[in-house]
Amino acid sequence: MKTSFVITLFVLLSHILFGQYPNLDKLPPKERDSILIKVANEAIEKFSVGYLRPGNQPYIEDIGFKLSETYKARGLKQYADRYLYAVYYLPTEKEKAVYKEDYLVKALVLADIGKVTEIMYIDDAGWRELALEKIDSNEKIFRRRCKTVEERLEEIERCKPKTIKLDPTPDMIERKRAFLEMKKRKRDSAIILRQQYLQRRDSIRREDSIREVRKEFHP
Image (cartoon, rainbow, N blue to C red; front, side, top):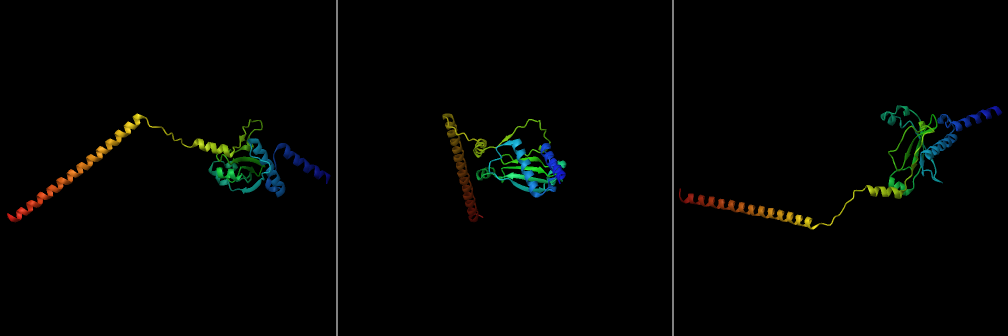
């Protein structure tokens, strides 16, 4: 009994020391979920700031092999056919309204090695950097900072096209007046030409009618 306890303790300590866990699918649900939350929080804290908030409850999603075809389509066969779990946290109502996402941060965990491979953030759906589990521990990490709703709204405002309203100069006013006058002259000229055409047409029709009547009296 004592020997068995020592072996179990050694195995658990080795996982902690080397930062790797056995296949999570082979663990009891309670132990598995505890490890999932632990490794997810460690990765989120390592690569970002401000996404782990006191009192924010973690949620676990059993993804399974659902992303295998997506990885294959992206040419990432090394991630296809590998079981995945996700640990995610919910945003505030204000964040959800601005970003239109259902999660604040989501960490994808490879079940076979118990490590986070990908993190998705509410304020940048395009980040999605893969292979986080392969990053060297000595590599310098630039941690991503969580943007507040106010900062995001300011970004949206800055990206809007700016309409600059200029007061017209005297030269601009004169050019506009000349342009309108030219359009009026063309319009008046077209009306006159139309009237002349109609008058000529009516005159020709009257002359034709007179000639027809004369023919009747002078066969």
